[in-house]
Image (cartoon, rainbow, N blue to C red):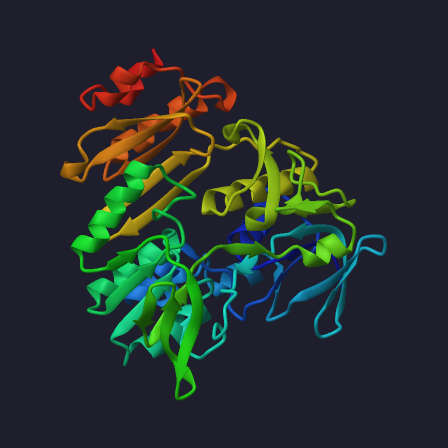
Length: 410
């Protein structure tokens, strides 16, 4: 089988690419090759509403099942692409099936980084990436009383919030000296550490994991540098490994992901890469190369790749944004705080409605807004100013929560 556009990856990015092609009037054949058996669905709720049982599997679907057939998009689900032949313009799956393409969109995402210690493969050790992952986790949680979460990033803290509310004894084990260390400033980290501890979560920092202990063929605890932590369930959330091995073997330029230009083209002809696995130069990262794991990036890059295939190239330029729900706190982030050289606290954290503003060379480059939706909405324009370099604003004005951010654009 040969398709005019073959999309590898059935997540948000792959689904949006197919949708954008059809919306743009593309009349050729389209197929999505997905590793999972499920049609494209939302991933962000997996560690939030779906884990909590507040959202059912059918409500995760990005589109009704009939949508894909009505738009003549072939779903080839439950298949993994193992090899790419850029010269022959074919891919081969792990079952040996060969598929040809006119254009290839690589939206394969990635896989959770495994914990590199003895016992990490024991039953009862889980990751959160797919719906099947959470279904297996939920089944194991029923008889469990103690849950250890390795990693204090978004996934780990969201799961901690859900499970502590469900009555589990939860311990978060973080290797660094604060949670959210890769994505947020210290003030935000300390705020969330205090919130989780107030909800009964045991947050431990600077932890070394030596092994996962087992008993009767399944996990029983986590060996740390300070002793053994009892756990009948362990959740590992220590990052993502981008799924780019097949492209790298085919000759694509890779680094932390597969490198793409501003229209999401890889170094191989007629092959695009989008979403979690695509490494690109980003105006909002001070023109540095970056790989973004977010719904926003997946959707926007999918639209860019589709536009290029439709003969309407439009360079990628979208302000990054993210969100995280924990307890009754909604964290909304706009921009990229990496490389900031100053921060301004806007509002009083004690009110549980405040923002941390990040500056680079005196310009606003990002905001973390906690229960502060107005700052998130208005702050976006400050981050977008001057082509993504950010707006230069007086720190004292930024700190005054009574002054709306939108007034600073003047």
